Image 1: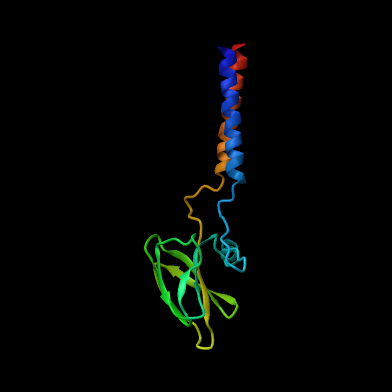
Image 2: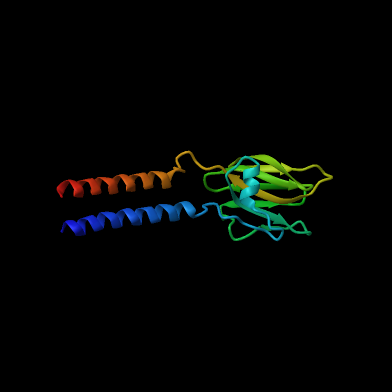
Length: 163
């Protein structure tokens, strides 16, 4: 009985560690790429945000379309080559990046917005960016690992004490 209990404690410990390392090895911010291999999450990070919320591209006929399947369906978007309007149907957007003349223009986020660029410029892409919320626990893997380790040590000490 004691041997089965000890093995079950060790098994729980090993399983906890494996799950912690598997969680830590997973990159939570999967990069979205367009035809020019842009890393949308990295672009947002380069401009002070944590990850991308989706992007809209303009074709040569001034028609806008969703950049890829990672775009959320909660953004209403429309415009032409010189301006655009958008609105968000959920928690809002933390920032908007307008790609004009080969550089990003950082715009305020919120629940809706309108932007017009200079007449001599064209808007080619609009990227919505987000910051991680404060209630997220970035050290989850460390906390879970510490709890698993303390539990395993406590189980080991209890078993050794009974022997």
